[in-house]
Image (cartoon, rainbow, N blue to C red; front, side, top):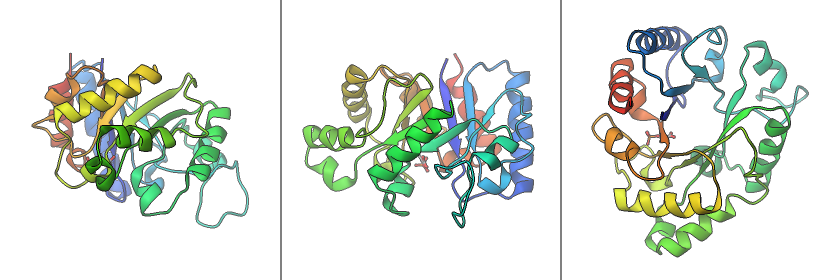
Length: 235
Ligand code: PEP
């Protein structure tokens, strides 16, 4: 059984998210697809979808608090209201565009771990690191585990090379196998690949040794494409 996750980023309205969830939920039921499916919509669309019976809705981000004076952020008081118990932490856009440090990320991780959330934790190297070789790439990735309790029972990892996210350039199967097997040797947790996964390559990627599923942005935003992805990865 594969884990297939969709990251909406800053796409879809409440209305289009609702119809996407309804369509995918129905599709999973009709086709008896047993993959674990997680959808991360925008924060404005987290409500009312907790009833989606065949898939899980997760938050793309939240602050490491229950509530308080943190303008622009949401905490567990808001997530609990919608039954959200899954969160994405360490995504490269939050690290590199929103400037989240490893220290902040680790704090967030510890907090959501203490609340028992399922955490999808992202790691991955930028292009210049990839170009300096596998050893440097792994060193960079291991730095992203500083402060992270990798024994946490509710942890799913996602290897997402920064240069592959949203670029259309997918890592080669060789790259994926090498990085995944190195991570898996150290950490025995489900490990997804993310970075320009598409309808056409999802099956091959998900069948590689050490790949337990995929975290998908762009190619998952259209419900028909996402259905095809689910079809292509069912076992
Ligand atoms: C992502 O946002 O996690 C991602 C993998 O994006 P994309 O599939 O568009 O590369």
